[in-house]
Image 1 (cartoon, one colour):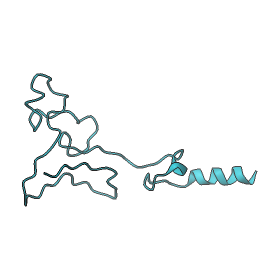
Image 2 (spheres, rainbow, N blue to C red):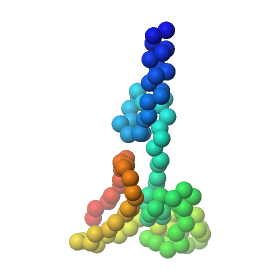
Image 3 (tube, rainbow, N blue to C red):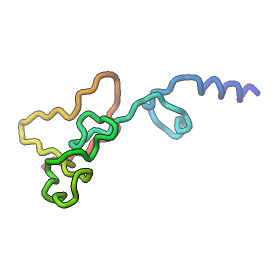
Image 4 (cartoon, rainbow, N blue to C red):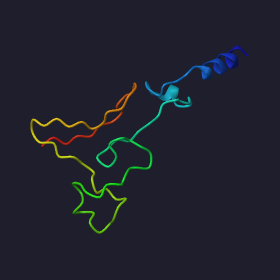
Length: 100
């Protein structure tokens, strides 16, 4: 019985979604996720695949809006590029870069 009581208490503790591991897998998080990319710089829900111009426009010219028309950004040497500016605490879980 003591084990069940401690398990119930643990579920009441807030979990921020960070420090993920197999032990935290069943826990619910109050974290909000965003997918920020050249298609959707704000990470707003439902706004991915909305670009009409971008680095992939030629390849996607016959596919129409909703396809990855802007899957990347070219950043010139010495240039600074702001990918996102979002208020509040958070963590970058994944970033993909191809330096050339």
